Length: 150
Image (cartoon, rainbow, N blue to C red):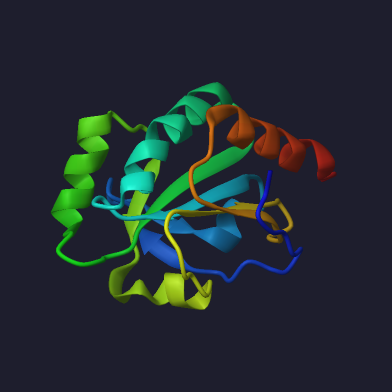
């Protein structure tokens, strides 16, 4: 299912979410696994997979996991386009903007969409490029949550 996995530590970052709250990866992974999805609004596979992320989030939102959609400015897309996209699709998990694409650069991002599954030890357990189905996301998160002893 995953296109790659490494076990390497996820690079820490802090962003301001669309709702104004702060998201710092190292603080979130104390108690939660994190599903980090890099995307932009005019990316066709990004558009295609967002409903799957929402479906998985609805299934998992009471679990110790956080979903973050990280909008990376590309082409003519603006943050307002990203916010409109979130509203249009009725997405209820967290979103933020990777201003100047510094986080994408730190993660050596080459393709969109790309998803990182990060465990509660802050390690990247799996990565996936291209469109994911809800079942794949749910299965990966359950493995993340179940395999980590706290």
